[in-house]
Image (cartoon, rainbow, N blue to C red; front, side):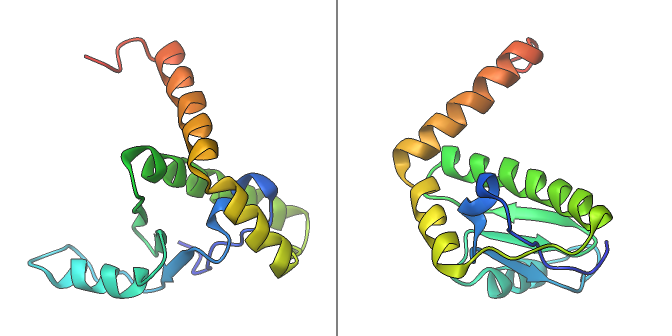
Length: 130
């Protein structure tokens, strides 16, 4: 809604470093395959895309990975808004961002992250399985 790409500048969101595309223009209500082709074109080789005036979409190698990416992009967007309220967002050193993305994208890290979120959902929303 503010027309900005996602700023990935925090360790907890580094799984999205250089891995979140941005689609700056919302094409309106989806009809046919046009919106899917537009989103796929924006996504290219990335696992996440931030869609202006719409939301986000994540694609992972598994349901667990896509879930972790989805939760993380929401968290990253909130952090971005909070940080902007305090001043300019300082970027991560690219080499360190890539290293952190690789570490946080490891299957065992994704599994631990997914399990954490699953436990929270099951604890806080006992009706989530109904």
